[in-house]
Image 1 (cartoon, rainbow, N blue to C red):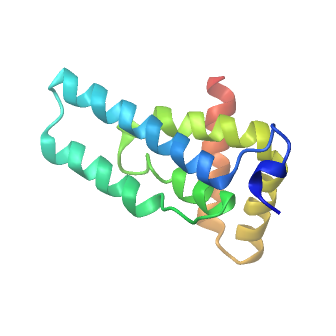
Image 2 (spheres, rainbow, N blue to C red):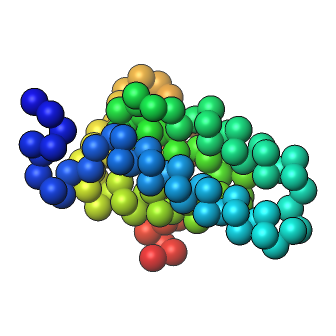
Length: 125
């Protein structure tokens, strides 16, 4: 079954990955144009994105990695919020399931971090 047979509401993992990359590129372009961010920092943002967001990942892997983008790079917080909004709108049950899986596997810190980000997103919107 090919991905095009899905309903138009469903977003493929590849489309979600591309959306993440485009949003990060918008931030990087803006930072570069303002000229206030060191080139090394901009390079770090690009490298981090390439490390975390890879072709072939499923939606859960993309989401799980994407919410880490702003852990050490606050410039990417707008991207993380957009990703969370997009993911929540289309895959809320999956996000809740992912948090449950983290808890069941004993990854309490990761589950707590994800819940904090979701709550932070909901409060800001």
